Length: 68
Image 1 (cartoon, rainbow, N blue to C red):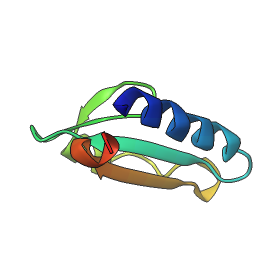
Image 2: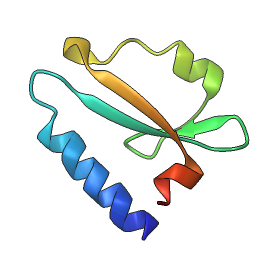
Image 3: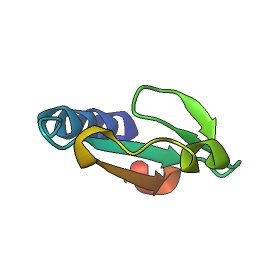
Image 4: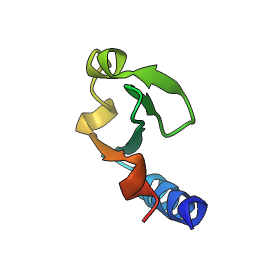
């Protein structure tokens, strides 16, 4: 079920990637985040990222929420 939700969210992200981009990040309990392309970074590195292109939006959700 979690993989199906991830697939649906990625499709939403791709459909919304026109002038505004949506990025979905999964917060792991160990202080790291998993990005939309599968990259693993620390919370500190995430906070230092440049804003998404064209004033996009980044959403961060917990791994538990992502599994719903």
